[in-house]
Image 1 (cartoon, rainbow, N blue to C red):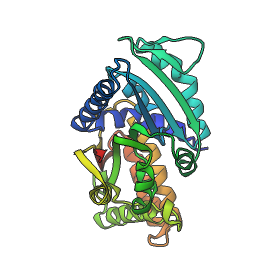
Image 2 (image 1 turned 180 degrees about the vertical axis):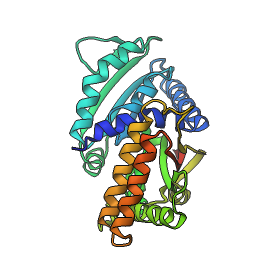
Image 3 (image 1 turned 135 degrees about the vertical axis):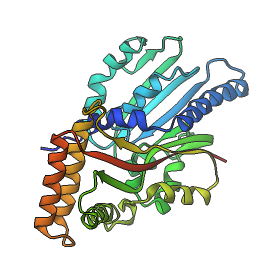
Length: 312
């Protein structure tokens, strides 16, 4: 039975090494700048940055933030609709933070102190994103917003303004791992079949739902750039964050083999539902790719984009 948290665990190391370093560095700097600006504005040295991550999953991005060495107090909120993700986050939180040198700050399991002495307050919200946004009206807005590998689930033309309403004045948004139209399994099989499989897989993203607010996009990265250009925001950085998976010296790194197995299951599921490919052809393509995976030969290239910006 498919477990979404297990899938997220398998792709965690791949995401971590694929994130665009320049865009990430810009995000960390923007949060630290927010803290300095806010402290000056309020004549205070203990400015707390409010950061919300939507579709936060099992906490991979949170761990990266906790390890980043932010020079400010941080109030972090993770929002996710999957109960299994929330449970994974909560059950591993203490081990993650202790390993990073954090100390508990009182009896609240969500209150911690960083190795540099800054406060970290953590909240977890098990909620649908639309309901969460509706509940935040008039709350004052967050300083930072993260949505990783999340926005391809939505119709950006209608959803993006709604999402950005979470941010307060000059709030910063960080949108990493946005799929953008290339899913190539290598080495090549029959070129015409490879192209057909990729087309069916991408079309499934676009046809995920007839509801506009849930309709995915197989080119969400470039579409995100286009939609943001028409909104009252400043784009600060954009960079590629491609997944490149291959056996290093004949062996897969980290959890890459498990991740590739998940990817093949996803593709197989879409091929099984499609009338655009012969069943026997589809089964043979999957069988060949599974054999390549077993033999440590399968490779994968997926094109993605990371974006950083600030509301005006």
